[in-house]
Image (tube, rainbow, N blue to C red; front, side, top):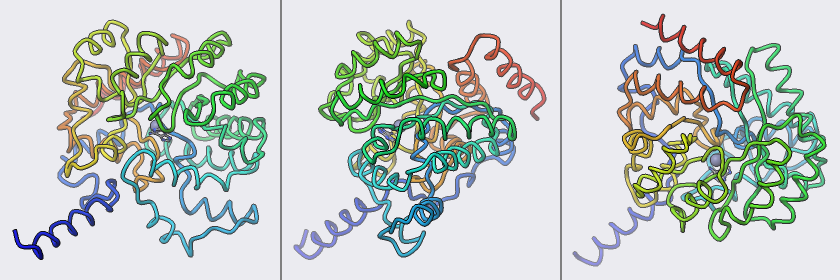
Length: 373
Ligand code: ADE
Ligand code: ZN
């Protein structure tokens, strides 16, 4: 290849690498059977892998910044959205943590949670368990009470007004010092009746799940469930999945797509009846260097794992919420109506709810499936 041609090819590759992976040429429903689109829209759904701070839309960031007297380094919403350029977990997290700095008051957390719950309810999510990252807010001097009670007030209003039920999962930010995570847990325990579990998010590199063994034990002793992110294609991913499953005995795994590379771990997960909260948009983002994201959902379904699907951080992923994520999964993972019904059922069965409440939600799904044309 000539020098000039070689340079042109390399420049093209560099430009492609700079493109955010969530930018899609096609609309989510493009090429999907209209009857299946309708089926997805009406399907009663759950969502268990959604970071509230990841639902903070650019429009709301500007509104909160104005209310709180903060200046943002963007001329307008379009410029802010154009800055959402990331290519891996750390580059995503830098944008995500910077964005949440506008959240300062109880009312801000209320508005954030109510907006997400409204959006989810409009897409027929009838039950959700939502993540939040309190260490980041404590760092800015926000009181734990303001964070939890703002979200809790929104949850109550959304259930009363919109009919969507929800619970809250406190995530430990794994790349911050472990003692700050313990301090956050201690600060949250007086409000534990408003929490259903703890989770583990942020940058996995160098921060394996065992770093949080004591935190998980304390959370369990206080009646909370435990889940952990095992983002796709991370260093030591299989080791970390094993630790989470076998040593820490988590109740759920968030992402976890690399498990299909280990028949032994797949077997263990199946024996445990483990549920996975899979976010195909984000998993696609992490699979760098590939023009087509590897099909995480299909490979996990084919391995016989219990997959649920979620949107993760929709405000940073072209504002695609659960219905759009499912539509893209139909195209990318060749999901059938039976696959979608099975994924929805997994969602209800995975709920951290009393058995009777779970059965009532499953009855709603069954009624829909019986009547859907
Ligand atoms: N924080 C928000 N979204 C995340 C993700 N998918 N993985 C790790 N940390 C996150
Ligand atoms: Zn996540």
